[in-house]
Length: 594
Image (cartoon, rainbow, N blue to C red; front, side, top):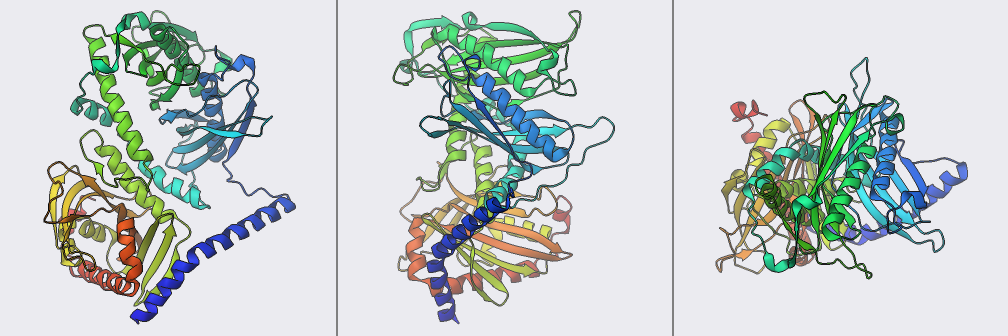
């Protein structure tokens, strides 16, 4: 039996790329047939907009104004949201945007938007922006964005229909959208907690202290009257129009610091706290919070009022924008040192320093490619929420991949493999007569894993970060001929289902802790992405799936010991089944909290 399993695995490894090629050929053939028949197999929520950049759309440098681009982005995304909802929609938030390229006069802007996932009355819309030079036929990616829209009907409550993802990309976006929504709901509290716990010292050596500008000299205040062209068919101000006005005052504030034409590189999440309507006066205030060596942060606040005599103005939005000043070779120039005003100015100055650190940590963690090393990312309070997000998202992306190959089936346990880039991934699946919530509680506590997994000699709880995240120190026997045992520092992140049909998630990945450095006693191991997905298949019936993405160091052992490894997989997974069945009646009090 073991030899048969080994031969199945070897054949599956060899067939991964050939099957992938055949799928691509079949896909191309299908595309040609669809074109011949005049059919369009696009996502039904997809909307595309193409605009030629005219001089009236540009800034002082002859480049497309980011404010104008934000209006086009918001309009395209809104049309996609309304196509799915079948009713008017308003912008609720826009996630962080990083602008990779500028767009010149005469070039074309191509914007594509589609709904990634719908929740109760809100939906996430994914947006891709590219520029095109019609003369050279070159194209560049400008930015990617994620917007949240809320459906509104005056006489009835909206309940949006669910999105059915079809392609591998749509399945990934649909799955990860639930985790991104979780991040948005706690975004304000997360940033507040991170700012309170994050301490960053000023570095005068990195700044041009010969040029100092008082922060008050960068202050800008402007008022805009909302007219019918600024609003949608319900009379609510377009979110993109508000964002464009915010970008305008922020650019003026940045220009007052550098005495040049700044370039907007990034915008932190926009969150609209309330609507504004035709006839409102919007007061926009901007100031440079801090200037670093090559970048500056500008804070913008928007308030609305209807009549001059109103005692209180409504807070519509706040945002933080990062600008740079580029020289003739498109290299960032050194900026003057900002001198904050006492009190609130000093607070904004310190918070801008902390936000920069948070922004860099978040960008590294969320965008880190799997082939980059080290695989283990440092753990500290300023990045824990993003590590947790990345941990769960990486597992969901692995689950959503289409090219899993069934290698073998023994005793109703299915073994799948996936060879992708430099990584070899394994996926085991079985049905267990246990409730999904019970299995979730039993498997999410790594301290109990040595009871059924002999690859876990011990698992010590190092830190209970919060209800859903914990860090463990795991001791494991050595691999192959290496007798020295391994140790791992593992972040375990668990998630309950966001909606019907979603699985319970238990995601695992390596982190580094100052309190647990490498020691001569053990060989430090790393796990990039592994964990469980648990689907409720019926009353007291759960589909248990385990995923493991093997790192390059583990890959050599896998390919040299295919048969032995497959046998270990089956025996370990069967031991997991017995563990779940034997302990399913011991969790009544804990289940009440799920």
